[in-house]
Amino acid sequence: MTKRFTVFFVLLIITSSSLITQDPPRIGSNDENLSNIPQLANIPIEIEIRCEDFLKKMKNKNMKEAYQEILNKSPILEKTDQITNLIRAAEQSIKFYGEMMDFQPVSSEIVTQSLLRVRYIAMHETYPMRFVFTWYKAPQLGWIVINLKYDDLSETFFSDEVIY
Image (cartoon, rainbow, N blue to C red):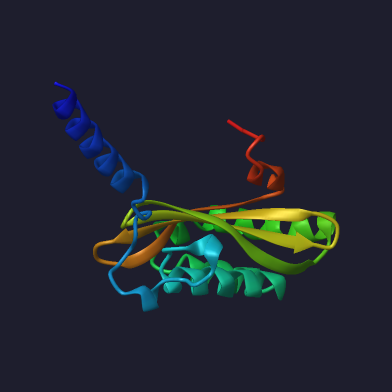
């Protein structure tokens, strides 16, 4: 009885340790196509580049061009009223918080190989702003943005702040 229990216990430990040490989900099979920034681990480099190009354009106050490019092929681009509101909100943020000085990646989440979220913080002159990009790999279109949030709720980056 003790021998069976010992064998069972050893097998349980081996199985459990392999589950604990599993790598996070990866997208694609070729590491050279993934971001090398720790906060964007396992995120396709294409998404990193598109997010950062968007933020560079926002920093240079090319808001309309920034939204047109990041939302390329996205159904959101057809919602012209929403795009206009996003551009106005970005212009208002400059009035409230000053110009965007810089930006940095904060974190990323992979739900599946075709759905992920990337978060950036934009440092304005007097206050940080939060950008949250949700990406979907559409079978016919490739990676498209399906949700884009831009707000001043940067405190939600901290684990003790939960906003419902």
